[in-house]
Image (cartoon, rainbow, N blue to C red; front, side, top):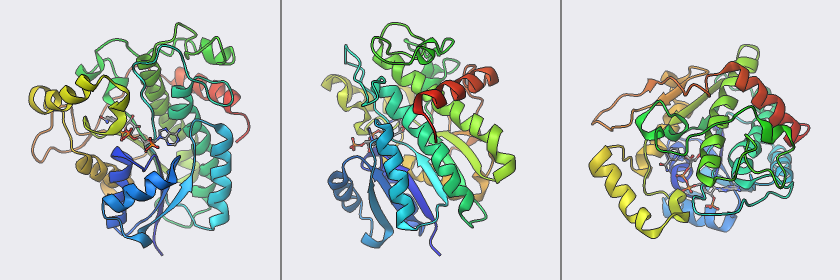
Length: 316
Ligand code: NDP
């Protein structure tokens, strides 16, 4: 039996190269994407063989779409061995918040709330799977952590006391802490929520299910389309800067390989771990379990994140 992995946002960047790496290892990849024609072309462009993947529609920025995706996956009859929550948007230049169909701010919805719902629903699919080794992996990033160099640049993430979530997260509210809209902070806040979700899933469900819950920072993948909404000059200079000044640069191929290792290799079967290869890439650099940011390791915050997110997404 081929192992099956669902990867969200597999139509470009880290998700696409993770799909390629896992297909190469003999996995069947369900590419969960919002634009299936783009995903199909992307799979072909990296040379994935037609029988190594299937395409399924999901828009993480719509909770109904997430629910529909899970229904469709169940109809497909596949059993699930791993889920990779990778899709994300980063919109540094917008002045006004965009909204999901539910009226929630879109960066937080796409990156966190959609995945929070997906993880909770697909937990059931993982539980049902007969596989001995089942994993759920959520992409993190160094910018979630102000304790690290890459995370020191303002604005810093701050979940506050979840005031914005508590008040319903709809217009005029756009930030988790209820403060003024700041698109870069919205991205960083959503990534803190991603790490908190992984840790809380681990705390709640690892012992009873045996599922391995992990997160990772694959390195600075400076030339993915994630930065497509930034100034053109930034898009030109950022990869050069990361290659030559910080040494943080990682190719899309290597980032995809790292995700594949965390999904499939026995060394990474450590639930609750946040894997990193460091901020400066060395030749043959080894991975290690990295301490997450103060907010992301705060158990009280994790509990609050869970309760408020559950309220916003509704029943699983
Ligand atoms: P990309 O922009 O290249 O890829 C993002 C993917 O998410 C695309 O496939 C995109 O689809 C998809 N996506 C966006 N919105 C939605 C939506 N509403 N529904 C479904 N899919 C959606 O970014 P990266 O590959 O760089 O980023 C992937 C992950 O890696 C993110 O979680 C990011 O935080 C993380 N990361 C990236 C780093 C980097 O340096 N690039 C560093 C650390 C972490 P479409 O193709 O249709 O736009």
